[in-house]
Amino acid sequence: MATVLAIETSCDETAVAVVSDRQILSNIITSQIKIHAEFGGVVPEIAARNHLETINYAIAQAYQESGLTWHEIDGIAVTAAPGLIGSLMIGMTAAKTLSLIHQKPLIGVHHLEGHIFSAFLAEPSLEPPFLCLLVSGGHSSLILIKDYGQYQVLGRTRDDAAGEAFDKVARLLGLGYPGGPAIDQVAKQGNPKAFKFPQGHIPNFPYDSSFSGLKTSVLRQTEKFTEEIPVADIAASFQETVALALSTRAINCAVENDLGTIVVVGGVAANSALRSHLNHLAQIHNLHLVFPPLVLCTDNAAMIGCAGAMHLKRGEVSDLSLRSYARMDITESQSLYQAIH
Picture 1 (cartoon, helix red, strand yellow):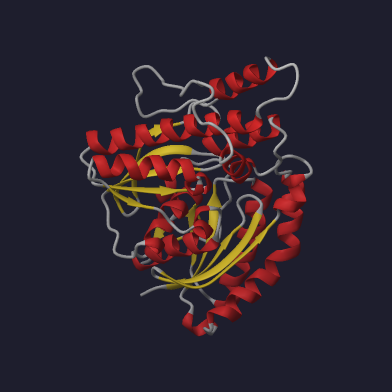
Picture 2: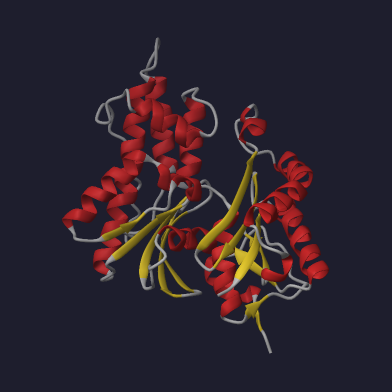
């Protein structure tokens, strides 16, 4: 068993958790949504400044709620990549400080690997291999989880990620930020078949996605109305298109690669239409679906802690010279570690 205190500051949530293997002992999330809402999106400088103001309080609260002493904590996990570099550096500095003060090994974690491990928190008996549909504000990927730490990207977005498309369309329709929950709510009053939008197929790459054309199509549709725009119908049709595109590709990818389990993680995994379509198609193809609870879909430190505990048990830790990286492919995540000798 490995117990770690984990820090996640890759974007606009200051999150700290204590995790023992696949059990959450504490999970503190301080969101900056209200701060960034007036700007219609995350402002990197403001995000970093707010992490600096809240990180110590979050660490103290997570430590206290865990009920453990520092003697019972085996390591310090922290998101190392990818993300907003200023925000990442705040978390990294805090993690290194704790590592030095308490003489605990440091474990850098890839943010996307963290999202994958939110599924292990939701279903502790889960084991590789399986397919992961990772859909968030910055990523839309289909990843084959061959084994722990062994990942192969089978499909990815060519432009806007699904969550990014939700934010942009929500802004276009005047629904505010963040766009995902806003569109999901408004779409309940709309007709998902009112408008036909493109699903963004990529020739010869059946598992890849493209949402820039869909976003442009929504814009062109709104420009056709000289008076009141049918916001609910457009929102419902847009959401239906994204949900169908993602669910169809995920199911086809699992079936064609003989994978019986699909885990769905990231902020967009909370979307009701996506969950509905995936559940329907999974039943048809007799596939097992794993959805983390909503609190673990968005950015959190518990998922980072779960991944960190796995690496620590495997003897994979990071040097104190570890850097933060704004960009890093998940297939390069093993470069964050060195073996314990």
